[in-house]
Image (cartoon, rainbow, N blue to C red; front, side, top):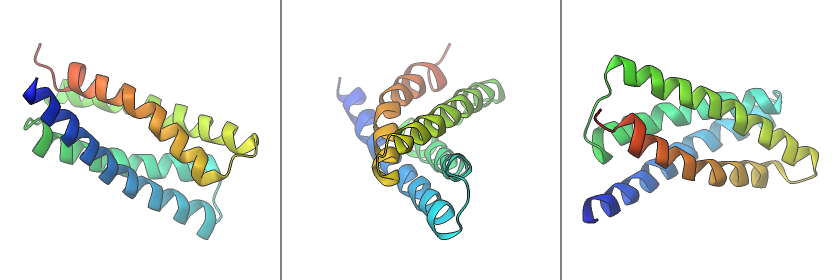
Length: 125
């Protein structure tokens, strides 16, 4: 249980770091450069995922993924990037402020991301 608790803490730290990167790029592209909200969300999420992978593989799980697992990791996160972007767009359409919409979407997907990373991506088969 101690190991799991340590991994959860590390995952939260990695997630916060990755989401700060993602959010900065999302706001920069959407509000400062005036790009489409879906494009801004997708690009921000890509940078966030790269940050998340680096922190999780190096510090949280102490494990680099092999090529097949990297493909699985990439496939999972490509689908979540799209889901998050559409979810944000729909929340904004419902007049939820774009930053709050981003936060709601990220908060919900974080639970699923931990399950995937812990029990699938970084799990030994």
